[in-house]
Length: 148
Image (tube, rainbow, N blue to C red; front, side, top):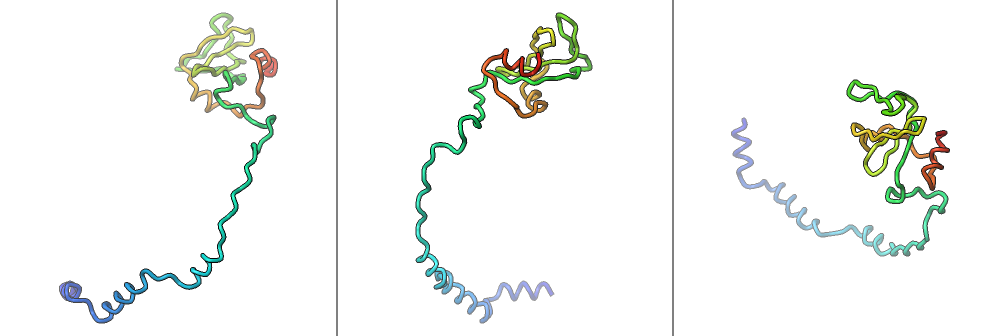
C-alpha cells in the first residue's frame, strides 16, 4: 500500500493539483480591494505632544547613583554558617540595623557599634528588604526614622 502512495507522489501532479498551483500563483501578489480602501482611509497619526515629565518631583524615586546606601531594621537574630552573629563589642545578637552600601553589608547594633559582615552581600539584602518607605538626607535622619 505504501509503495503505491510513493509511486503516486513521485509521478507528475494530477490535473487538480496543477490547477490549484496555477491559481495560487495568480493570487499570490494580489491584495483584496477592501484592504486597499482601508489603506487609503488611514491617515498618519499626529505626533504626541511633548511633556516635561509625568511625575511631580515629590513622587520621584531617587536613582541608585543618587543614594549612598539603604538600611532596614532586623529585629531577629542572624544565623550564618550555623553560627549566631553577635556584636563584636557588646555581644548583642538581635535588634540589628542592616546597612547596604557600596556592595557591602554592615550590621549596627542598638548601642551603635557597626561591623562589616562579609558573609552577607547585596543580593541577600535585596531578597530580605521590603520597599523603601522614605528617603533621608543624612545618616542620622535615617537612624531617627528607624528608632535608633
